[in-house]
Amino acid sequence: MFKKLLILAGVVGVAAVVVRKIKLSNDERALWHEATTAPDLR
Image (cartoon, rainbow, N blue to C red; front, side, top):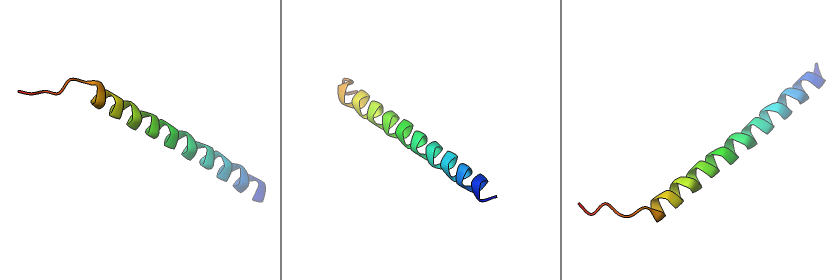
C-alpha cells in the first residue's frame, strides 16, 4: 500500500513539473510574440 502511494506521489510530482514547464514556455512565447509584433496604432 505504501509503495503505491509513493509511486502515485511521484507520478503526480512529475506531472506537476511538466505542466509548470509547459505553462512557463507558453508564457515566455506569448511575451516574445508581444514584444516582437508591431503595435496596432489604429
